[in-house]
Every structure is written in structure tokens, then in C-alpha cells.
Image (cartoon, rainbow, N blue to C red):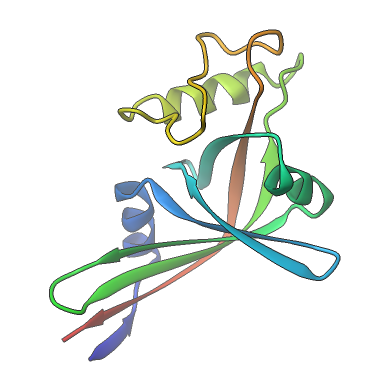
Length: 148
């Protein structure tokens, strides 16, 4: 196997081409990793979730890490790691532009709400939606590729 480092552009292309990754957060020194669906745009990973452990932990410590991978020919693979910062897109005055942008970025993809349990309604409002929309600001990015 040959391993090489991906350029920033190659990393960005991999994030753009994929929709599923792993999201890691830490609370009180304990790591927690979950699968999550996202959409990449303007140096952010956009996502949403129902309230729970992941959201609670990211609220407590906004420093997170995300990993996205894809398999290539044979035993080959590409993997990108993002170090970033959790930013909740609140349903409040002053955050409507960011929330609407997240909605726009996510809804470009078929079945974008799955497996989020409930399909959000249009437009999202605090009275009708239990979901938390958030984004991960990409602060650092790195990637590797393995090929035979």
C-alpha cells in the first residue's frame, strides 16, 4: 500500500462529495463518537439533530472533530479529518439568515433529513420543529489516501 497526503483542495472535494461521517466530541475528558449526516459548504459542515447526548456535549465543549472516508479501488481508501468548532444555529432573531442557509444547503440532497427521525417542516420554526440545526466551522483539515 502507498499512503499519501491529500491537498486541501482534495480534502474539500471529498467532503463535498460525501454526506456521512463520524463526529467526535468530548465532555469531562470522555470522548463520544457518532455517525452523522452533513452537507459541506463555505468551510462548514451543516447538520441537524434531535436533542440528546451529542448536542448536550457539543454545547458544553464546542471543540469537535469530524472524519469522512470513502473506499477506492481494491483495498484503497481516502480519509479526511476536520478539527472544528460547533456552532448552533438558533431559532432566534438575528440567526435567521444562518438557519435559512443551513436549510438551503442541506435540502439540496435527496432524503437529507434521514436518519434524523423526523422530517423537518418548511419553514422550520421553534413551534413545529424539535431539531437542532448546527454547523461545524472547519478550522483545520487534513487527509490521506491509500492505494495499492
